[in-house]
Amino acid sequence: MSAKTSAPVLIVGGSGIVGSQAAKVLRRLHPSLPITIGGRDLTKANAVASEIGNADAVRVDLDRADLGQSEGRAYSAVVLFVKDDTLNSVRYAQALGAAYLEISTAVFEIGPAVGLFIHQPTAAPIFLGCSWLIGSAILPALHYAREFSSVDAIEIAALLDEKDVGGPAAYADFERQTKAVTTSLIIEDGRWVWVGGDAAKRTFRAVDGRELSGQAYPSLDVLSLGAATDARSVRFDLAVGESSNRRRGLPFSTETIIEIAGTRRDGTKARVRHEIVHPEGQAPMTAVAVAASVERLLGLDGGAPVKPGLYLPQVLLDPEVLIRRLAEFGTQFKRA
Image (cartoon, rainbow, N blue to C red; front, side, top):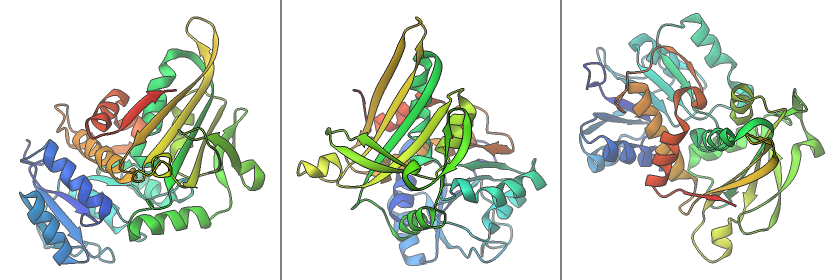
């Protein structure tokens, strides 16, 4: 572990539902990695720090330029599980030269963070992990797309159980992203377009065979897939309701359906469908993807630490690595 990496990873919101799970996954993968749990409630943060070990807790104030941290405090990474409307966390990470990761920004909100990066492009690596479950849909999609010589369309649909929206921070993100704007970004016949009303709706088939009505969702998935492929049509749709597992009397699950149409390498036309399910909902997948991202940013996976730059999931992470990590922690992958 390098001297810089030996500084703690600051997890802001690390005592929340998803943040605490991410801290536990990081601890399981890297027992010696120092971790600092940051939050407004120091009692809760201390409880998580005590549980995972080799960790401490600090109170974080996002309204302050120094986040309320003591002078001389150093971190190797700043990981956000809450929405920072001040962007003080970005500036703080840049000042430290620490890797920065956040998961709460919709595609229509990325301008300020991009502006801060452009102003100081060599200060720190900035990772916008704001696609669905931090790349847990787009990276498998890119993996599955490799069987095609050319891709015509990528359609992703996610079913989020209504009992699995998450804690206060996650719920606030969901409310803001679904109500702040009335349109979402898709690629249609080679054109990037913002759609609303009926054009934003799509019917898809859940894992249990039900037909559900989804709505185009403003995460960064379309942006990433459009940049990484030549697909002429790309969209990501979300439905909130009863998951297939809960409908069978089991605990809620989360499910993602990936459908890809195009020309295979043997010249035949095909449309394939893959299903991704976690029987414990969205939080474990988010936690694992964040942990894998921190691994890559800091070079904890055996590679070199990531250089300063602006990163999306498909640029930072290898699809096979993330798929393997997700499967290791209970995610189920099936070609339907």
